[in-house]
Length: 136
Image 1 (tube, rainbow, N blue to C red):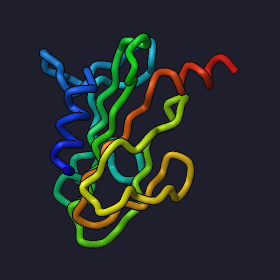
Image 2 (cartoon, helix red, strand yellow):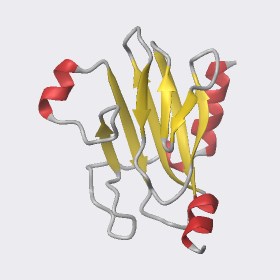
Image 3 (cartoon, rainbow, N blue to C red):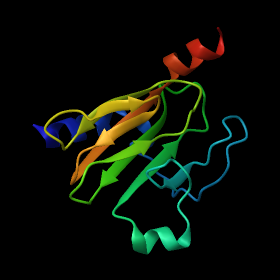
């Protein structure tokens, strides 16, 4: 069942089916890079983080504001213990789409979830939610 959920997410999300390599280019209309690696606290990973961390987030962002999904985050907790993961405030609400954990991680604070150990969770930032907030 979990594999089917991840396959469905890939099939439904253009950002996960890109035909070109992503280079970390800064999008001027969204102020996000097209691909970023983040620490669990939501800040960009530094060189020393790669050898010390068992937890990280891959963030893919769209440069097109007319797409249904503006960004997708793949949060990976390879440690055995739960830990909080924070996603950047992108002007909208992140929605958890699927996880390898037995239940969806609990919301601990705005844009932050308590991720179980040994789990992968995908969150999406949908355009309709971000646009609704921008027009208020």
